[in-house]
Length: 93
Image 1 (cartoon, rainbow, N blue to C red):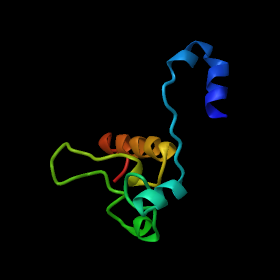
Image 2 (spheres, rainbow, N blue to C red):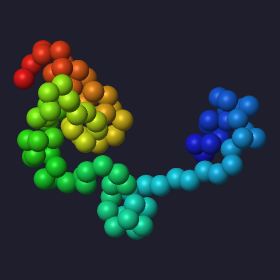
Image 3 (tube, one colour):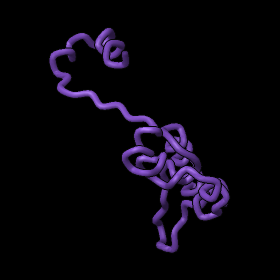
């Protein structure tokens, strides 16, 4: 269904699709033994860690960012980038 929708918007790509693979958290659990396929495991401990909310490192000028800093997913990566940019520009912390 996803490929059909994509092709409805971009019909010229139809002949260029070679393979489609779809995975879910259940697929990850079956093959990997965990729900997350990458990044830090999605667990309670992850969200109580004070280290995840900090982008600053002991190395001067080096800041970390990414989806594991706040939550999971693309929206989290964008939010983490925004928080890191605020920190680099010294808006807070």
